[in-house]
Amino acid sequence: MSSTNPIESSFELAAERCEDLRPLVYRRLHAEHPQTLALFRSEGSELVKGSMLAMTIEAILDFAGERSGKFRMIECEAVSHDAYGTPRELFVAFFGVIMRTLQELLGPDWTAGMDRAWRDLIAEIETVVGETA
Ligand code: HEM
Image 1 (tube, helix red, strand yellow):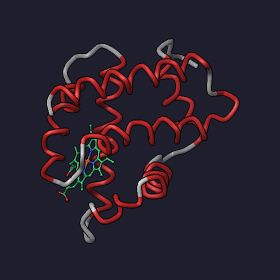
Image 2 (cartoon, rainbow, N blue to C red):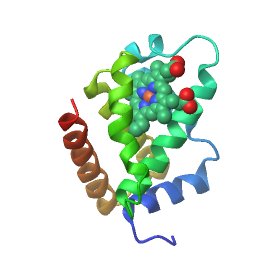
Image 3 (tube, rainbow, N blue to C red):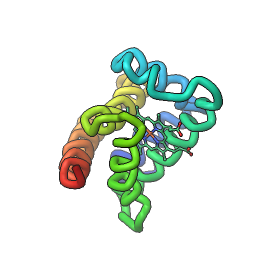
């Protein structure tokens, strides 16, 4: 493990085990929140879902790391998602879905430090997104 940031480490370890998180993340999202199935367009949604996940991960890494700017996308997207019919609670839930996907992939290698860092991150995102409501 090369990173000392627990959020980064969780992504690094997951990447060693799984080339593409997308199917796992969206399977979990649709299972935990079935109403999300109807929110994505029926055609071309694979591309949108792929870029949505990639951009969310970039924003998470920036939020948990140097906060150079990409993390601001979270606030902006919370607003644009109002127009997509995604309530703020559901918007925040996506971060928990990503966390649990990594946790499942890592199994016994999921550490208490990762757990804490992810929970803190999600709580902070909840505050940021709530404030822009
Ligand atoms: C469960 C929560 C979420 C749902 C249901 C959701 C739903 C959607 C939908 C329906 C679209 C496509 C709109 C279209 O058809 O053009 C979309 C696009 C997008 N979403 Fe989400 N979203 C969620 C969470 C998030 C989060 C947390 C982020 C990032 C912080 C995010 C970032 C994006 C981006 C960047 C796009 C545009 C992708 C592109 O077209 O390249 N979404 N989302």
